[in-house]
Amino acid sequence: MLRNALVRRLYASSTRLAPSYRLITMLSESQTSLAFKKNAFATRRNLEMTAKFNLVDSASGRSVFTGSSRVTVSFNILDSEFASLLGEKNARERGIRELSEDMRVRLGVFFDQRRGPEG
Image (cartoon, rainbow, N blue to C red; front, top):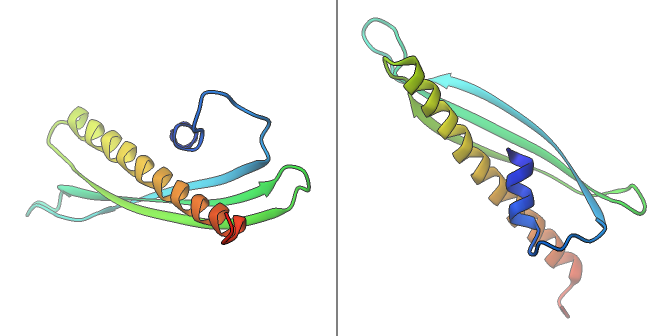
């Protein structure tokens, strides 16, 4: 999901050129229960997702930029297991969208700074 979101955000056109860089990403996630009923069952969870990434120059194989992005999204735990799974899936999709946007912005800043003030 993250790969597809990044492809949509990073490729400005459908014409794909030979890549000058390779983006290596490691995605991890964890869940934390938040709100509890009196019977000790959780009613809400946080889904925390972290993407550590490394931009590698394809020609030299050198790492030119590393970073990490983190996002926390929440979802309700309902009496229906199916509804809870859909809520978790939706939260994961929202988290991936936010991560990919944050990564796109960070990479954009990196390339802008690399280009220098003369443009």
